[in-house]
Amino acid sequence: MGYDALFRLDGRRAVVIGAGSGIGREAALAMAAHGASVVCADLDLASAKKTAAGCGGTARLLDVLDAEAVREVADEEPADVLVFTAATNVRKRLLDYSGEEFDRVVRLNLRASFDMVRAFGAGMVARGRGSIIGFASIRASVTEPGQSVYSATKAGLVQLLRTAAAEFGPHGVRVNAIAPGVVETPLTQQIKDHPDWYAAYATKSALGRWAAAEEMAGAVVYLASDAASFVTGSVLYVDGGWTAVDGRFDPPN
Ligand SMILES: NC(=O)c1ccc[n+]([C@@H]2O[C@H](COP(=O)([O-])OP(=O)(O)OC[C@H]3O[C@@H](n4cnc5c(N)ncnc54)[C@H](O)[C@@H]3O)[C@@H](O)[C@H]2O)c1
Image 1 (spheres, rainbow, N blue to C red):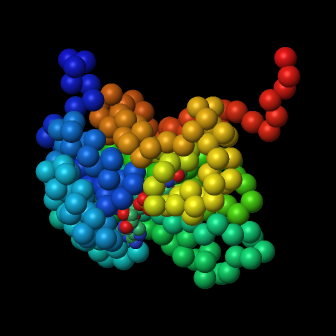
Image 2: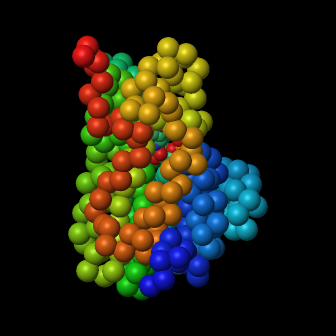
């Protein structure tokens, strides 16, 4: 292989679910820039169309809570690469959480992931190739008050993806997770609206700042491409060093 083409995605079809916003949008733009034809799917069709227009791709309306609709898109858009980002968080203490809120977070973050991995994984296994990339979080391994259900779903997603890697690997399909640190997107607007909270998160990472959504794009292109041909079942932390550093105290020299 010529190393100049190591990260190229020419001739591959990538489906990005959650392509209308934040990390999903940047994943779609970056994969298209590396030669992929990209299908931009989102619950918000207008924003998916905007991303598609920016990367020469096509847009599709998709609600991942509808398992039948997920299967339809997987059948109609046979993917070499699947990236899925749709998720939600209800930041509340355990004692304040309602059962309805628990169900809402689990349905989107975990149940829909299960449906997407199965629907797209089936076609990839049948064709003998593919790369599935799901978005976990630093919350899959470290947590804080108010993150109980989100953390549980992200830890669950990691194990779901690792098991998919084990089951699909013999068929040439790779499955990996990306675990971002804190990234400025609509998902984290609630934190940005509180200056103390925002600043505390910035200082927690080794780099001393938040990430921009486009800083997740390199990890997506890498895992989608042949540069990662022997990478499966892994969790790639793109967290500015958040999980490497305890950070509770800076000892004097
Ligand atoms: N932003 C962060 O700081 C951060 C940190 C760690 C992990 N993550 C993870 O990264 C992923 C992407 O996060 P983001 O910040 O880009 O989020 P975002 O809210 O900016 O984008 C999510 C997209 O998913 C779409 N979506 C929501 N529900 C849907 C549904 N039912 N069907 C189809 N599409 C739906 C939304 O319309 C939106 O376009 C998520 O899994 C999130 O948990 C984000």
